[in-house]
Image (cartoon, rainbow, N blue to C red; front, side, top):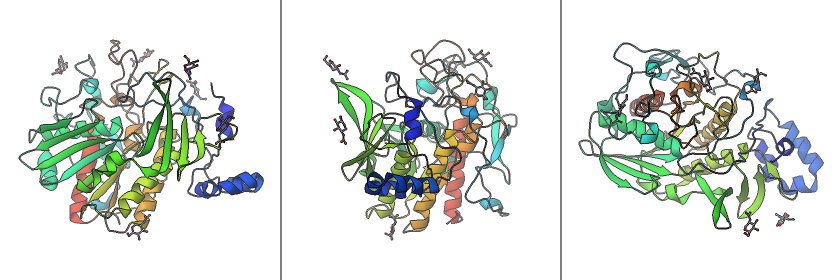
Length: 446
Ligand SMILES: *[C@@H]1O[C@H](CO)[C@@H](O)[C@H](O)[C@H]1NC(C)=O
Ligand SMILES: *[C@@H]1O[C@H](CO)[C@@H](O)[C@H](O)[C@H]1NC(C)=O
Ligand SMILES: *[C@@H]1O[C@H](CO)[C@@H](O)[C@H](O)[C@H]1NC(C)=O
Ligand SMILES: *[C@@H]1O[C@H](CO)[C@@H](O)[C@H](O)[C@H]1NC(C)=O
Ligand SMILES: *[C@@H]1O[C@H](CO)[C@@H](O)[C@H](O)[C@H]1NC(C)=O
Ligand SMILES: *[C@@H]1O[C@H](CO)[C@@H](O)[C@H](O)[C@H]1NC(C)=O
């Protein structure tokens, strides 16, 4: 076991300033004292990430991002939300859709589809098929504090995206969003299955009535991440190249009109960090001669490198819209995925009950900072937009497949990371449609 001490040794700052410490590695090495004073000076977050690596055998295949071993999230202090644009906006169209709470939905508005009206629900998210009995978790809708979020309208969506290509880029939670959108749209136009690879990492659907292409492009880290092979098997230890985008998505990127980018669940593991082909450090590691970093560094750099690539790309499509979908929290209680953690709640939390001091929220902060940075430095107007699901989903511990019914359909583990279909994850497409409509009206924040 890696001792907790190792984590404490690692640098703990969150903010951009932290990067100065990284750039100054020679300085750190030659003058550790001064460097650490500098780092301390920039230590802004009062509650640094204290994440522990996952030590268990990698029983989760690519379908199941490993989750961290955060020991007791509730011990972290509650911090007030610090959204970057908190000034009150009177105009309905400019209201912050992502700040709100869950309220009971009206009769007949509980869900958009069922496991019979949507035939593409993957087995792993088909909760009712696997015996989930409670349906109350479907009877809630998101209410932004300052306005109403319209119901999802597949016709409106397809009319906007007609003739275009949209891809979800990221891990299996990105795929979960794609699968939800597929169900929502299939109520209006029956999608054709165009491509599926054996691992379901790349997927392509086509909506013939609207000439709309919907894709899933798998990328664990968004940047290059190679698993170390030890004795012929994957070691679950990765070499991460902080300055190189994953070609798997970058190659397809020039075809896209919409890119929905998300990531985060794969970073909670031992990783060696490279920049310019040089080893610059590692996370969750125990080497004396390698700088230890907290996982905020690789996560930050994954998004920074991704956004820089998109901004700098010469052959992206005109009118391309890149959307950052913020981190979606998992909800393991009394453990994690491999030691009996479960998620069997049947109703949402209130805003007061949700834990905005958790690492999920901090991870979102990193993503948001990199997003704001990309927006600030962007070359073209309306290139980057945000789909901020973290707040809403922190309040939905009831939305996961889990194992409410004790039949252990997940090889004996609870899935408290992905989301049931139908379920609260369908909200993400309500947000997405609202963004697309605003984008069309040209009233996105800029
Ligand atoms: C987490 O911490 C809280 C507050 O200190 C405590 O009440 C709770 O029992 C702890 N939970 C676990 C799983 O250790
Ligand atoms: C849909 O869910 C019901 C339980 O609500 C289950 O009996 C049925 O097998 C499921 N159908 C499909 C096609 O998955
Ligand atoms: C690799 O295999 C060798 C020989 O079977 C064994 O001695 C060694 O411990 C293994 N290494 C790891 C990291 O499992
Ligand atoms: C760190 O030390 C180990 C063992 O002493 C060695 O194998 C490794 O190459 C060293 N790494 C660096 C970056 O110097
Ligand atoms: C959830 O599971 C735990 C552990 O199995 C159990 O103690 C608890 O009563 C369950 N809660 C609900 C609401 O079913
Ligand atoms: C984004 O692109 C613009 C125009 O090509 C360039 O001026 C700017 O420096 C780029 N920003 C980043 C962060 O790459």
